Every structure is written in C-alpha cells, then in structure tokens.
Length: 85
Image (cartoon, rainbow, N blue to C red; front, side, top):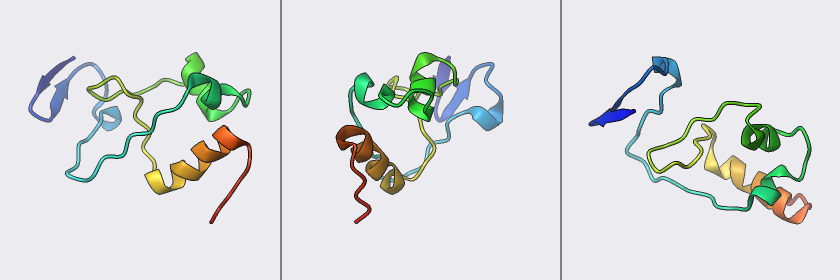
C-alpha cells in the first residue's frame, strides 16, 4: 500500500479504509494472552485470523470504537472483574 497524503492507494474498498481525523489518538497495549483468554470472543477471533483486521500505518490493529468504552473491556480482560465506575 502506498500513501499519498491522507489517501491510501490499495485494493481495499473505500468504505473499509482508515480515515484520519485531527483528534487525540489513544493507543492501548496489552498481551496477546490477555486478549485471547475468552475462546470465540471478538478479540480471539481477531487475533486468530477468523475476523479480518484493519491496521494503521504503524501496524497497530484499528478498532473503530470509542476508547472510553474500550478501556473497561480491556480492564475486564486483564483482571476478570467488571468495574463500571
């Protein structure tokens, strides 16, 4: 894939390409084991290749969701306790 400004030239249909916004970007890091401990979950399917992934220019997996909603999910996967405060 070649990048020209903010447009990526590839065979990926337009509706599936990453669109960049001028907003604060949050990145999350965790272990593969943390994301895959629940069999047949979204994350285990994503990392096993059963669900196709979209990656940004750094190679990070792109998930089009609100980071505020994602943080409690990631914390649950880490601690196995749900805290919605």
